[in-house]
Length: 216
Image (cartoon, rainbow, N blue to C red):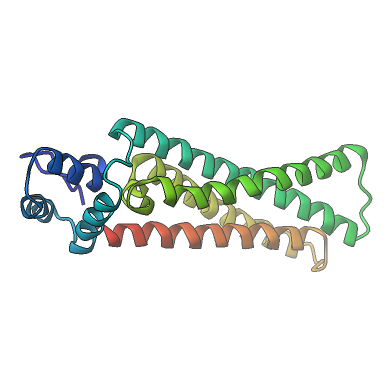
């Protein structure tokens, strides 16, 4: 839902808190602000949450443009560290699987394995910290900005990559099975990739659907 209103610009940029804050600053009554939000399609619980948040922190939000910039930075950082962490985890898993199957690592493979461990140890905690930090600095715990264009685009890109990976994993698994060998290093590698892709798809699909329902 668009959540905009030509008369008064209700909750533009999906930022209900900014609209409430501006309305109060302009001397509008709470009832008038709430009625405008209802007319724009906002649900009662979101309206109540916005008033509570503004009452608890009347001067805490940054100007709207800065809020948008901060949200963009945090979401890009979150997804970037996610992608790097996934790559590092998969590459580390491949090295462990090869060692379990007795496959000797040459020097480039060993170097890649060491780099993947280093990236995973550094970047994954950054991903966790970023996602822990987002609800603390974005309006309404990140719910309203969560439907921003940046986040939606990154989420859909992740869903696309996860879907393509699942399809590719299934094709490669069938290809390997036609060789007549079931127990090969390739099969646990394919399984690892497919499981990670499935987890990512399930998490972000449910997250996107939940945010849409909250703003329906």
